[in-house]
Amino acid sequence: MTEEKIVEQAIEWMLRLELPDVTKADRAAFERWCAAEPRHEIAYANLTQSVRQFDVPRQLGATTTVLRATLQQQKDRRKTLRRIAALAGLSVGAGVLVNQVTPILDMNADLRTGTGERQTYTLTDGSIVTLNARSSADRWIDQSRRLIRLAAGELQVQVAPLARRPFLIETAQGSASTLSGTLLLRSVAERTEVVSLQSLANLTTRNGQSRQLQPGQHTWFNRDTVAQVQINRGSENSWVDGYYTAYDAALIDVIAALRPYRRGVIRVDPAVAQLRISGAFPLDDTDHALNALAAALPVAVARFTPYCVTISALA
Image (cartoon, rainbow, N blue to C red; front, side, top):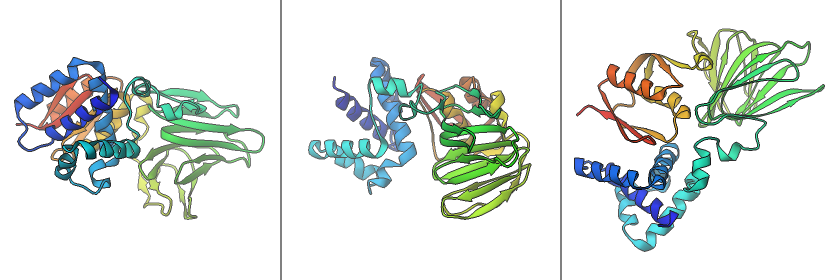
């Protein structure tokens, strides 16, 4: 079977499972399809992750119903598939297998991690950088500058103090600089989250807005604005030790922290996405973390395959 045909089938399954009248028989048939061939579950996992990230039906200007109707016409189906692929960077086959472990677009980065990996690097100036899972960054450390450019994911920098030589961390939205101390930066969607642990940091957006961050504070910025500063809770860097610590956090935020540690996708029903929870969840054992969520919240965790997990309200 061609890769294009597999993608078509994956789209049909995605749309069928989102219908309000989906039956147990439908879900059983879907599970059989996923189990029939490894390429099936990989294609579906990649598709659902892309839809979650890019909200494909909305960006195409169509509701799910309209998109389904369009896909039922062979002529328009292929055109729509190409548009989805262009929007989401959708692909299947060997490239996806590699990308589940190390993001393909970041293969040339100086510092990088794959799914479920954390790595610590000591830079030539003595600073220590720890990358969270599925993260990447480039570095420029010499006599004239100390610069890290975070391309994706999250990092912690323990900056070695060097007089009059600030350490700069750049992202797509702006930068943070400090002379010493520890900073965390996380790239999410169209903004950068910044946590100061023991550092006095200067934040500057791409469009020139600036703010100073004191030790023990955190905030976020986009290309135009720096958000209001807040006080740290004290566990913002618990991922360095392999845990995500939640304080009255939304379920969707806990799952966002688990996703870089699990191959495949975790889909969350919007009906339960904002349920609140507190606790420490192990990043290196996502099955244990998912079981803990199921025990603490009124949700059902369904594992169709090791690559396809859905979280929905209890029936």
